[in-house]
Length: 331
Image (cartoon, rainbow, N blue to C red; front, side, top):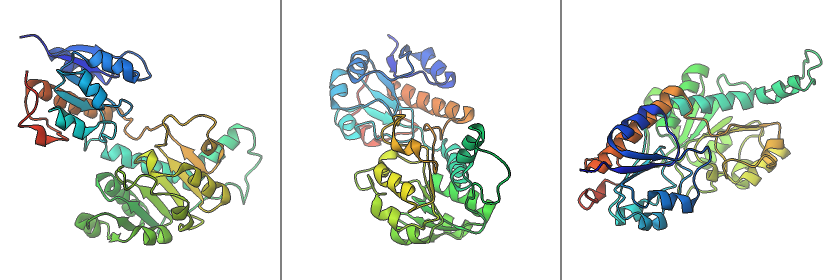
């Protein structure tokens, strides 16, 4: 029996790639930047499996160009880049890599919060540029963390891990929003579930961990920033489109809020000339929340397991559309 053909849209860690290569004929995109839509369609047209990233749009046009495709294994927790209904309609399995990113992402959320609250990036840049003249009693004054109120927008795994660090580490009071109550957060963190407006008004720090969907796109706009404290720090490690970036820039520029820390933006990468970069009270990281060796290796293993299960006709360990099981494409 011929080996399955697989296209990997960017090089992933060897822990996953070696497993795929041992069982499949693999074509790996060699460049740092992702393939264009036309190139992706061309490279996947005769493939049984595809390893995609958030930068790769898996849509109806691609699926129709790949009649042999059995599985799309997305190297990410999120799958907004994949048209899951279109995959299901065409009997193509979709997998993702949940769970293993939780701690790394929570660590980055806390890192951005600390950086923005204590003006670390701004003060370090001033020192490097020669603007550190002496010890200044009023220089680079930031916000305290101990005993303050943390608002978690989306109390899922990552939101809980972020709140746990800040509640137990700094004694923060925790407020949260979620479609349903989180007994674990309420028991372990004494967290209180509130509506978003109340969370914004009461929180000293707002950390966003919400899903990206049509109802949450642009959920943070000028109206939401105006409801926050002028001393508030805003952190987003979820998805860039959740935030109206011009409104955030104006809120930071006008002093409506104190500072912001972002690991995600819209678009990615954010152009170097973007107004947010020019604001000293905005810390921007290049989407590095999962960028630890252990986390990326774990993602690669999950991705490979999903891919191999898909081309073999087995249940995917992390199956986004398990309802396709009865109609999935066979070898």
